[in-house]
Image (cartoon, rainbow, N blue to C red):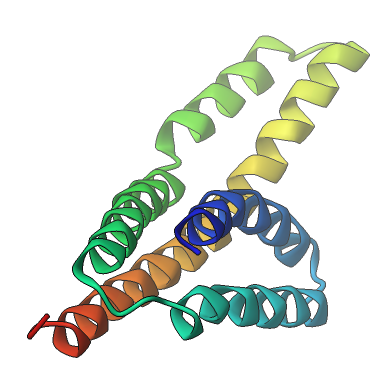
Length: 144
């Protein structure tokens, strides 16, 4: 079950990126369905966890990597100034006619900047959920 938890923690990165782009476009119901399914998959390893020290250690390492990774992703999502400067530089550079490639670059940077705020918020919440799960594991198996 440790490998299943590892796949969920790592695969959640793509879910966060996908749902943040969809949320920035205005769809809100699809994310609730996706995150409900991911939450159910997240609970499965904890329901079938062996009650020994080594299983708890493996779960703690995986969750600790998740906390660090998603906290980093949240900080990166909230810090969009370099992307904004790059977009402004592209806009100033193309004062006259804009080629299709330059337009696509500007448009993709705009989408990334709009989705970054949602990606940061979602990543921060996921990191917090992993921290709460770690503390519950410690209190649950603290006497093992």
